[in-house]
Length: 152
Image 1 (cartoon, rainbow, N blue to C red):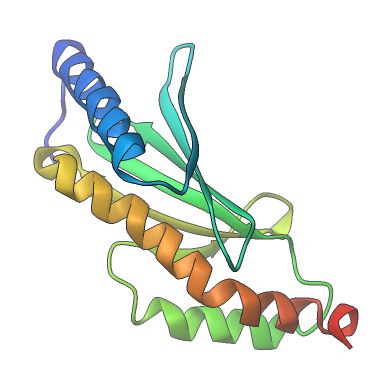
Image 2: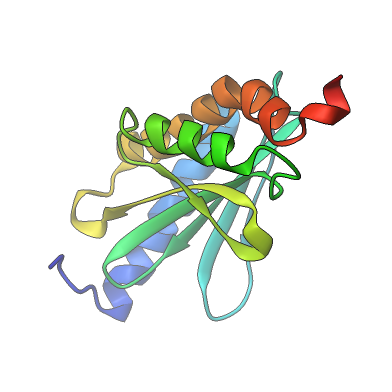
């Protein structure tokens, strides 16, 4: 089990994430927005402009043991669900640090998490970049599978 971080340690990590995301925004021209949500949770989003999918928004959630990250990929398929799910499961085998999953309202998400003990700027960059790259790579083909009749 990963190490449990206390409130002061989480506060330090949250400030570091703020700093890393500010630098991330400065270094990546496709960033449309970065923000931190107010409230009890330590939650951020990074919204990026893409070519295959107009926007990809990566959500980050800082917990006591891990940083969870996820992005919405597409709505529940209207057709060819079995083919789509098989396609995504086969893609999961090749992914590192992320996996496709079915979420709320049967939508498709790409998710991952990493232990706070290894959280650093390069790992955060890798996590965000992986989600963005995978969505850009797979979106055109999977949207055509799940909504084939709309592309006929």
